[in-house]
Image (cartoon, rainbow, N blue to C red; front, side):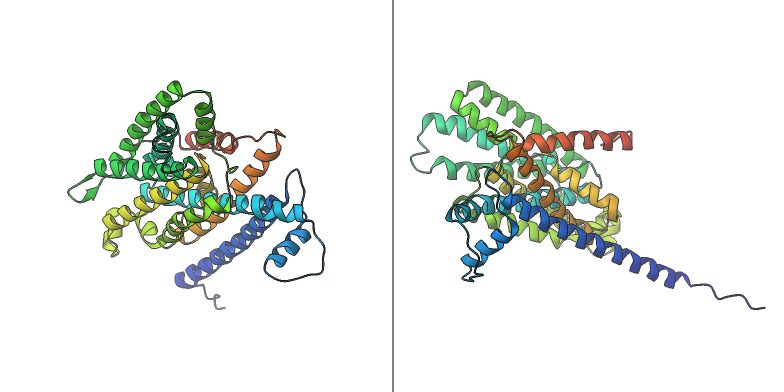
Length: 367
């Protein structure tokens, strides 16, 4: 009696790869459907409820399509000028922070990495605090540039300066040491945090309220007029990071292995750090400091689908938008008629999640 032929290792590998691709496609479709539902809910949720049908009718009317369904001018004004820009900003900022976190975790080969780890968020916050307290106190610069425009510019510049400083400290002889970059980022965060504390100490009541809004994060200031000029600063780093899945996958094997695979490791590391600085700086410039999105979201995707950045980066963008939109809906409604800073909600989720990661890893060694 003849034995049944056994499958070859190559065919078994191909079957496993096919199953994984189907799993990734299914997860991606589910996340996109979740994102769509949360986005529609975000633009309709609030003191004035706007249903999905009315949202579609208003948007179609704005595009010149008459669906024959009546709607109120009040709902159109609220949807187009308040809810829609806020939801678009939340989705983009959540996506940018999540993809930046995923890229840094791949670069450092450490799931505990976060955009704030290398001083990006803190550098942006320090520049904003200096602008609010010193610029607002003297008023000389506000005669040239209004504060609403000066703050995003200052925050973006602060993020870039902090990142370049950390990168310069960690680079020697054309090579960048990742461990030194992490330690330099911790030092920059400490220095910037102390400077922000000094700004809080010398600020007056109005400046202190502005600082609290900026440090805790909010989507409340979203509007087309202030958001559209900054959209390229969010979109370009986001799209560019999505194209770096190949180098990031190679870096997971180690820098020497990535070199053997044909990648320019130093160039890839420089590009990743600069793109993360640009994207996170623009996000902080528009919404203030919103923590832990870049930590929580990539790790959740990695737990579901594994470390392949071809799936990790785009699906982190989708889930990041979902998380920030959901947090914003809670922030708008949990303490009505006031609005809770969104950074408080993300920290309430991210803090315990970070502790869980630490307990799961037991010991995290930085050297």
